[in-house]
Picture 1: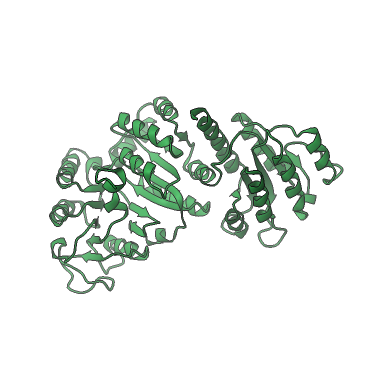
Picture 2: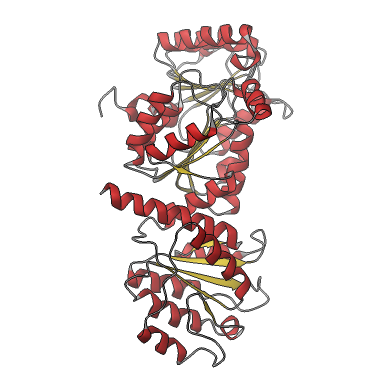
Length: 467
């Protein structure tokens, strides 16, 4: 791999050979304790070095060192769990040690005004002088699930399932919310980066990396503003030709913009300007962080969608009506069933049901899941239908279960994705996990499913237009 390739430039960050935690502590009420715990909890396989000049005892059962210079081996990644006034001296020590990546949690830099701007400029100058890449400052860190790296101060993030969705968030709080939603929606994580003030790692740098990252299949972005819009859009346009990018942005109203400026030192401009630029670059614009995560899941599980014709089947009409309305308003087609398919379905559904699309089979289909399977198999054989959506009220362990494995197999048989709106609380619903493990893209509200599917179909159409 070339030394100047995007993968190699950020290798010390995502795949460090060793990690040092400056400010490591045995006190569970300090961020230095939580940071070291997070690094350990991920199962990192290289050396971990706690650094604390005031500790002569082991820290969390690891040998501690008074300074980075006292560590006997090389250090790739340094996690700075210290206040803002101690970051710059520690960064100079890291530069002298030969470290090539750092994560700075502390605030008090460019987001607080002129003095903070000057301090951040000094930090960048030191890092740039030795080619060190810095995540932050004013962030919650980064995670590489595949590489067993948790450089945050939240050990539970190490237990997120591994997958192909990589997320970059300008806001740590929003990033935390997104990670929680990913857990709720059973979306596997590849990389997560909270970039904060963007010292010398920008959105564009991460898009350049993730475009080539073999462990990333879908990219999510939460953005409050960007300094070099031209470079960002250039990298976004290039990356979107390779992998789908879903973006949620905020900070356009007067109060929101003012808060954003004091939050990460950034401010967005006209919403219409940003929206137009995102569209031209080929990005998918999500309306909320929930929409971002749900769309990311659809892109992860159903990227092979090859058209915009949807078949909907249900045993309860209301949720199917909501899905149909959202899809149709978004320009997604719900084709009529052919004469042959209509006749075949009519032969086994209740006599008072109509062989339409959407297909309402009433409560008979709740107790007899084979009605879903037979109707979906017939509908997916129709050329202008490219995916199927089933709506089913979960029994949450006390009633009939949807035949997810057989439903997924029908999708594979036709080479078309299948979706399930499983009406039940995700916190209690093992059925959702079972369905997704079988290969069914599953949501627990009609709105989430319909919005994600509308984004997916538009992306599939734009992909075909791009060739």
